[in-house]
Length: 307
Image 1 (cartoon, rainbow, N blue to C red):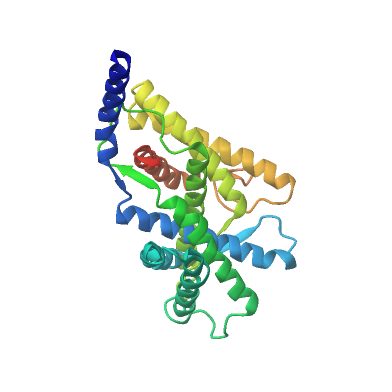
Image 2: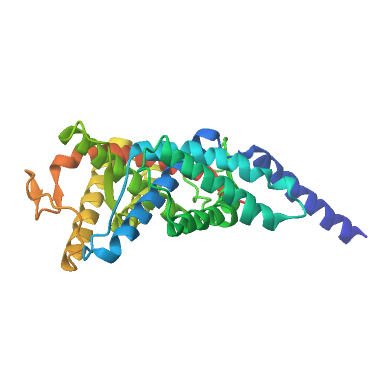
């Protein structure tokens, strides 16, 4: 009897210890979901445009295209689709009809509407292959992406010691940083294209290799941030040279490896202060900004957990 009572008390104590943490955990804020949805939609743009050109191209740099405008449209559209997805509770006895008929129909209809209005695509109707692709994306969103994404929780009040290990698993953080690399490059190249061709539609490009380059480099910088900031107590200006040195080393190493296979998508030979055409000090202000921003992203990701 006493042993059972002691066991019960220990279980109650554990539950009470966990209760404040769970109470502080809430669904991701709307602004954060918009951020994720836009970045994810842009990633699918890059992937689909690259795969569309791949059969007729011998270019191993694997370029894909999108734009900041499309990113914004994706963010709003998929927030609307999230609301539709949450109506699956209205189909308690017929989940297959919702996931494979109702939701895909709304998804494809919205994509067609966006193509004819906000995205200003060509007037030709979608081919059977394109309709099949949109249907596949709809099933992917309802069966995989949203089912997993909506399990993310945001903790507004950070408990525990600062600099604790991130709650998001390593593969999820890698995917986040890789997609953010696509967003960075598309925004950067779009800005350059706008300056060079002010009358043309704003569009940017990136390479599929950038996903792996940015994903791995950002994980390295994240580790440096936790160690130098919380482990050593270094301030931001003291950490910055370490970040910049790591970024330039990473870009140079990836550039050398990709150039061996004729897959390098950048060449800075026409810029001053370049080394081997793979790195240039002309982009130093941009890397400084992204290094500051990386710290902010790491702090946000530290508050997100997958439940």
